[in-house]
Image (cartoon, rainbow, N blue to C red; front, side, top):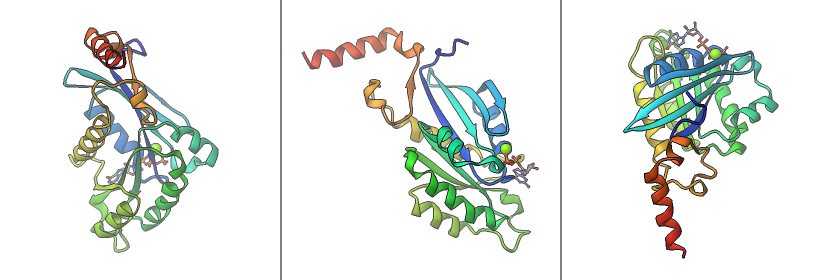
Length: 213
Ligand SMILES: Nc1nc2c(ncn2[C@@H]2O[C@H](COP(=O)(O)OP(=O)(O)OP(=O)(O)O)[C@@H](O)[C@H]2O)c(=O)[nH]1
Ligand SMILES: [Mg+2]
């Protein structure tokens, strides 16, 4: 696949403390919704790029997971700048991971990522942990930062679908019709060759241009 052969491309970053389940969640997300076209993992970044077709439109979604252990402010900003969405993840059975996620959220506010969600993972372990994080507490934190909250179990469950549906519909809901490059500025959404070269798109741009003549 030509690296520019898509209609739209955007990036979703996944952040949170070590072992909260980011990679497990990403693995399921990437194979359930689309086809993996690129993947690479290092100590600093776990990257997966997926091609996802919806309504005859090909989206290239780049997921960038920042492993919890190697967080350094420099790399953190570099990886988050220009992203369209951020997934902040904690482990509902480990309160400390919930307390620390607030630092990730506040540190990352400067990058002004347009779409954000908070995810409480390992919901299967919640009942067996007295110090676990309740749904109402987590919703409180999500509201404080203007986010939706989802509880998931990343191993063998279907709870991931509502997260993908929410993220995808919110992101594509930001794309105006027709999607001019100017109108997508600041949203982290790129237009690829498949759209740029389509006659329908060229015509729509001509219609806009004629309005200014
Ligand atoms: N019980 C349970 N275990 C899970 C769940 N999700 C992930 N795990 C387990 O949690 C452990 C850590 O998961 P990872 O996906 O490697 O965690 P991570 O957040 O990517 O960790 P770092 O990359 O080191 O920051 C693994 O043993 C997973 O199998 C879940 O929903 N429930
Ligand atoms: Mg990981």
